[in-house]
Length: 296
Image (cartoon, rainbow, N blue to C red; front, side):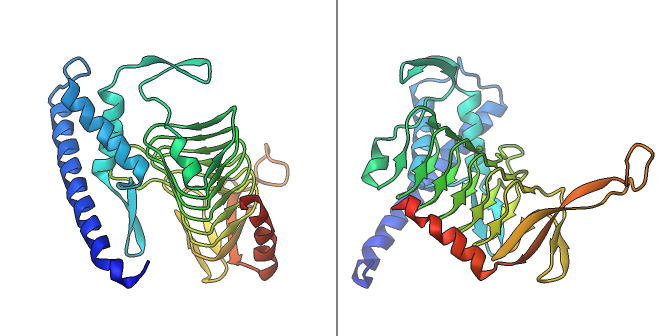
């Protein structure tokens, strides 16, 4: 963007900031009323309009369930409260999509705008729930599921049999291999959701859960489980880490000796999973680069 448009952008940002502040205040007020006993039978058109505006803001990317603050990711608690209110203050309704009847409190997301931004989603099983953001030039293969509050960045590939959980934050130019699970963290509201930063490549069958953060430009081997309960043996810094994989790492599963140790029930002893992280090798980057043809 040229520098002469800076003032226009600032005006837009200021306007969006004001709108976001108003929406936050409305959501917090509705949350307080919910805590005081407000039920689905009590709400009217005004309250439903607030809930709908909130979902629209999520889908536009104007508000997000988490954001990076310095070197850490922090939850936007009011946003997660807004997601919960959309469940707590709506009735389950009979709905229909593509000739299939279903029952849910939320409709599916409208996808007409995706084509305008170069994003593709294939039929018969690409499910994007209301309140999910999907960026430009992304690809969503069927069957896949993107839940409410999730954020899918520009140029990201969500492959077949993938699930992106509620409020999960997936960055730009990410590759989620087939049969990958990105877990959702909706409650407690103060807890940051799963984050997959820009440029990450997750191999087929990976699972990322419980608020784990995958650092930018990392490459994770297939069937790797990333969760705060499993140690990351970072051979670059020679540290044992929990809850995050540093940037620019190649990670894969190994098994280490368990605290149970030798036992009559375990032939050869008991072992538990761990993750080993090394520098990303040039050949690994070359292998992931070959898959750019899928995005063209």
